Length: 134
Ligand SMILES: Cc1cc2nc3c(=O)[nH]c(=O)nc-3n(C[C@H](O)[C@H](O)[C@H](O)COP(=O)(O)O)c2cc1C
Image 1 (cartoon, helix red, strand yellow):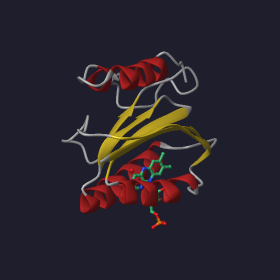
Image 2 (cartoon, rainbow, N blue to C red; image 1 turned 180 degrees about the horizontal axis):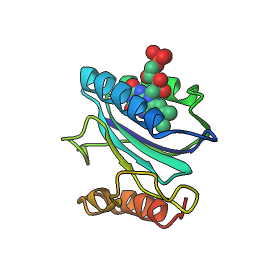
Image 3 (spheres, protein in one colour; image 1 turned 90 degrees about the vertical axis):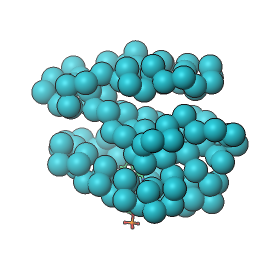
């Protein structure tokens, strides 16, 4: 097992329909590969964690990096892992309203993610992203 976390900046003018399309592509492709993870969006930046076989994670990440719906993709973490943090989510999207887009998102916060039991170094990464205004 392998996990990868990156952050990126959404393209200017990203619409809620773009988010729905990303989620549909992600859940289908990830489920086929037994990949899991979470995608957080704060109205400006994405943070995504991908979990699965290293070969699959890197193949999907190489596609994600080239996707024009976001830019400036920066890898935050890559590591081998014994257990998944989100075994039940082929890809869970959490989109939060932001100062830039107050009406954006599904009205939830990131607590479903930050409340999960997980190793400390991962908690810090999610917790840090949670403090950004977007
Ligand atoms: C922020 C973001 C997250 C994405 N997450 C995934 C993902 O987890 N799995 C996936 O298969 N595609 C994901 N995609 C979509 C891929 O970038 C790509 O469009 C998709 O894999 C289809 O690739 P293809 O057009 O080369 O077949 C994501 C795209 C963006 C912008």
